[in-house]
Amino acid sequence: MENNYSNNQTGESSGKCPEEYIVFDEERGEYICTLTGEVVEDMVIDTGPEWRAYTPEEKTRRSRVGSPLSHTLPDYGVLTTISGYRDASGKKLEARVRLEASRLRRLQAKLRVATSIERNIEQASREISRLVEMLNLPKSIIDTAMMIYRQAAEKGLVRGRSLESMAAAAVYAACRIRGIPKSIDEIGELIRGGRKEVARCYRLIVRELDIRMPIVDPIRHVSRIVSILKLSSLVEKRASEILIQARKMGLTAGKDPAGLAAAAIYVAALELGERKTQKEIATAAGVTEVTVRNRYKELVQKLNIKLPAQ
DNA sequence: CGGAGTAAAAGGCACTT
DNA sequence: AAGTGACTTTTACTCCG
Image 1 (cartoon, rainbow, N blue to C red):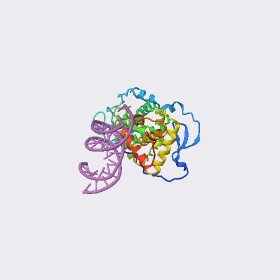
Image 2 (image 1 turned 90 degrees about the horizontal axis):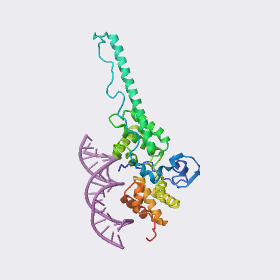
Image 3 (image 1 turned 90 degrees about the vertical axis):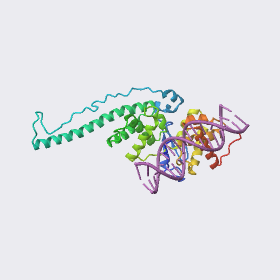
Image 4 (image 1 turned 60 degrees about the horizontal axis):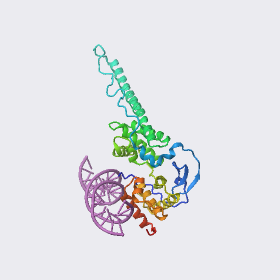
């Protein structure tokens, strides 16, 4: 799996609750501190229907529905240019006129590129909206994704790649920026290229546009997984504690946040007698059993967690 | 079946030659 | 630009209670 969890900004400073760790939790409408995991401020915000984004019926939405992509790009390949050094009747043009013609030609070429980019962006907008809707993401993601896509398009990154994949990558990037824990797979399932394509385009975007990408806090995965498995909020709380502790010990750098969250939940559920199988947790988190095992073993060992006798 | 463990594959990143 | 190494997760097993 793509290993972009690298933790460059290892801000492991143990401040009380510095402002930069306070983060808005989209799914729950709360401000939480990612260091302590506590709710900083309870703000009842109506996030509309989006709050159901992470429920089990996700599965049922996996089907490929939505408007089919149209291949009817206007002007596809058939373009008019102001050409040559002869006029309509075939006479050679004199120098001045020729200069004028070449100026127009350049202008037209520029304009053509500009409008073709516009058209491309417009189509991408449809695709992005479609993805955001199918993933039940907040509408505001569309704007973020569009910003990213626009920059990519203007840099000419879309040329030669599928618009679909680039749009999907923009959506994923937007989620990352906003700290929404959507996986590349979830987005990849909705397009033809699949996860691999999305991942490739995403990396390209990040590299070429110099976007500094915040790593997704594993704690953000916790509430999602917990709600899928219908575990108690005690488990959620305890799992967050474990993750905070793990981060302090530098166990989180370079690891899949979803895997970490899954392992923490597994441990927490075990401790609190709300046992779930590794398999259940793994699939809910979108990782493998083995990953859960590895992470969980590491957590138990390095954090000296004593598990109740089974 | 759930859990534990493992070897081998595969992916992606930071290096070098 | 291909090669290498030190990572990761996944796949596909085996073994145990």
